[in-house]
Image 1 (tube, one colour):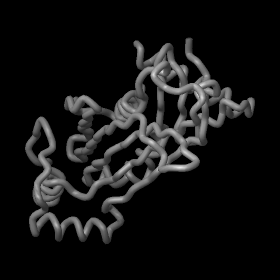
Image 2 (cartoon, helix red, strand yellow):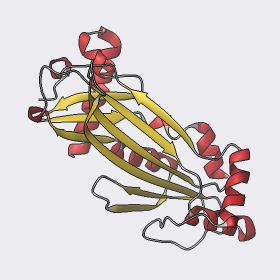
Image 3 (cartoon, rainbow, N blue to C red):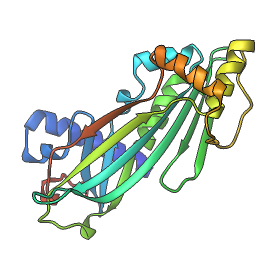
Image 4 (cartoon, one colour):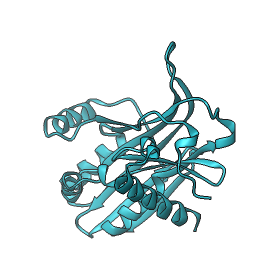
Length: 226
């Protein structure tokens, strides 16, 4: 319920910004919006930037999609390096199993708790991404009202993990996915992983990084939900 309210508020704020051109628009970009919700600073990221038509097509061909989303609230400094006030990381893994038309979704948030959603439709997947890409970065009262801030979001599309390699190999051999696991175990890449990773890089499926920023803003520039 709370997530739905936050999401509706974020969409409303973005729509108001695009129509009015108010000063508060400095706290959002086409990809990222920042707003005040009750006593918290809330951030939302446009999920369509992550699940593009090209990536959906690759999922349909059996390629897993693994990416991290790092969100930073930074305080602008004219003299020194900008200070990071808040930071959190979200982890996502998506596998579409073409042989049974199921999409498995894994997510872990700042608390590290793993959430699994098996057998999702594409619409369900979009809804999960939209819900998970809306988060709060702490209390507004803990920030300096006179300081200037901005939000940076870094999306890292990762090279193959061990589970990804196993899934791809099983898919190529038998048309079936690898074994289900409760978490992704990161290990040092083997020779097989390196070779497969190189082939995926050549195919345009390797790691890449995208960064999004809001403009500088003060707390008084933010739209408030309550």
